[in-house]
Image (cartoon, rainbow, N blue to C red; front, top):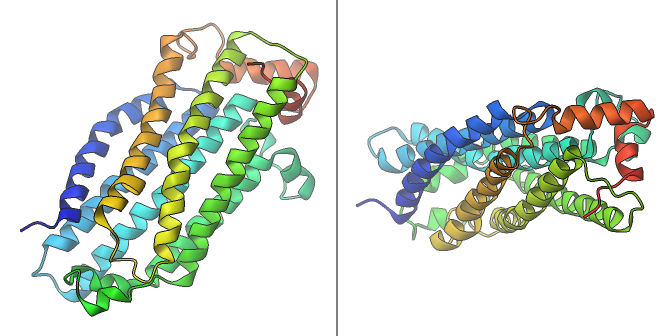
Length: 306
């Protein structure tokens, strides 16, 4: 008999496999910053598919040596968890494209002035640190995942707590998400009280981008808050299956669908590079260069009106 959590993993392998072509389409259709975001989204989808496949194989292959099953569970949980880092990075990249922050302006030293001028870059750095800590911490928790093949009422599963580095990694994921939400909120406040009202196609695309990214933070915050509480629980393996289904799996799918919907909305409204004479990213960069204002400062001084 197949366990309920394995059935859920199989279902979501199929769901993410269906999502994958649309995510690839987004990476092909978009330009510059938004393309980077959709490449990251593709990596998230790939990691989720591979992670769930490994978890299914580990749960069903009872004939394999214990070490092999442990390694499969460890790799599966690592891929399933670090995928969130790519998802939040995709959102930050979309924010950067909407604000006109291009890669040229991010290739600066790690000085405090550069980070204050472009706080989203700091979020990328924290996110990278969180992902590394999560990988190391999950890998050091292999003894915990060795209990993954045991029955749910097994005493070994009751005390399966992951390494502290993985816990710190998830705390940093939560911090990045909250700070990113505050960053978006600060932009909306500036936009509402800004004196400049711009209605060009570039700013229309930026408004749609920020709107969709803002909405996507709701399921993402729920997902990362749940996962953070899970890594701090007494047993990482004895989770409520249906809580995880709703608070992690479904929240991830909703967030991905929101980001994919952004791409189709921009295409429908004729705001993608192939549909207009000048794409948002190119137009925003030229406007900033013509006014000789650094992109992020320009976005602050001329916020998008809603």
